[in-house]
Length: 302
Image (cartoon, rainbow, N blue to C red):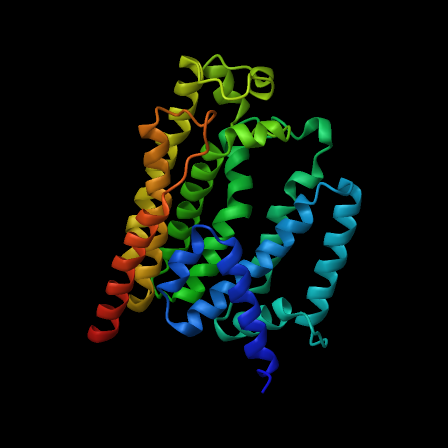
């Protein structure tokens, strides 16, 4: 017997998250089923928008057209229109169930389209200051945090700002990990003011020899970004006790994996050029095991 449409829609979103969410999915597993379904739906929504924005087989203009059409279709669904799109079905239900403001979902899409607003020649060095970069990180990561805490559940108003800053910590970690890969795509997310302060030119990052170890100046530059990220991870720790008890293990898993990634980058002395930093599968599984044990304990004492 076929699954009901909504159940099938959530199953499709779970499959996308399981296939694509290399770090996030381990945290999703540590959530109770209704919250896990909602998180997977949001991830699938974000993943599809991101894939449309990053499809380099077509021009930037065509990507913008396709994203605009997709977003218009989503807004039609929000206004009560019919849809057979499993992601739209699941996200609409999750947004209603967990009272997720639709404006936050619009901001998710705005974040993944920011790079498309730049001409190809201007994509690198788009952020002059850390304040500018913070605005980008807010849209691509903090908004995700603000959506997630609505699914996790919270009552303390401080959770909003802490979730925002947790997203900044995660995105700065991603930026550090992907410096070499981004440069190959003519993108540099490190603020120009920081490059100048550490004597690193934009051109040298974009055209460095493949796999060459970082220079002393580059290490100092990356360490500056890592120190900022460490500060924002303090907000993640402060956020944990403010969300619903049964959701805390999932956030704990996510923070441990992402913070572990930053620690690996630091232990490698910021050599993000010769190999891409990652948290090994066995370590992720160990973190997940602890998270699942915490989930079980949370259910016992609730």
